[in-house]
Image 1 (spheres, rainbow, N blue to C red):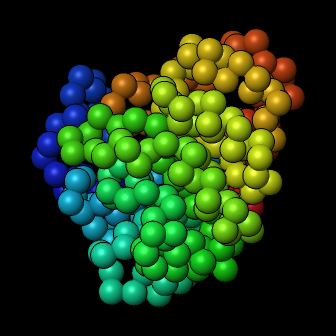
Image 2 (cartoon, helix red, strand yellow):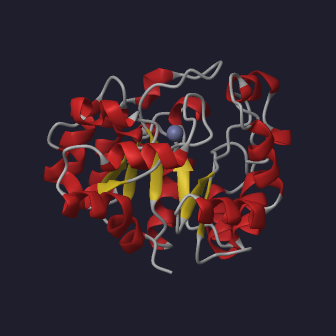
Length: 271
Ligand SMILES: [Zn+2]
């Protein structure tokens, strides 16, 4: 993300204890440097998650233009996620269409940083309905943050996976990805929903690999619906490569591991 847009209180939390923040800044400034880094750790493609949350994090709709431009350096390897926040643009439906044309491949909704619930469209938020409707029409997956956030001002009431049940009922063709599988409080809700809804997935970013089997003992049952992710460089996530190594050491069938690390994302985001 462009850190000049991030509020000081949020940036402090991101930087706290990081040994590699100079690298993060270097990669942020130059996609070629980031691609070279991905080569050294054996990563073929990366999803770059950005979203709009002006009041709590500071990110404005400009992140969409920034991320689209960044990922255009290698669209076959860098998958741009963007955001549309009701209230930040005059016409959210037009904004979805605009960012789709820019090259944004998916939308991240961050309920606890945007201070809205995923199903607020059922309580009068027509802008949110328009975002889902246009995302569905543009075949853009919508990733919805689930699970706690410790960023200053985050409203965790909105972070329960169950609030996304309505979305998959009302937009059955929309691909919904529950980010972080509801960790560390609501994993059972995420597991239930991913099994229930044909077009609902989850990612396991932000989950320490040593906690994964404790959180999702039946992860193999949903291996077709789980996406790898690290959430790097967010607080507490130190090294992407180490996370992959720890995941690979878990007692999960090799075929399921391959789906999670590679096949599912490759299917959702064709080149
Ligand atoms: Zn998130």
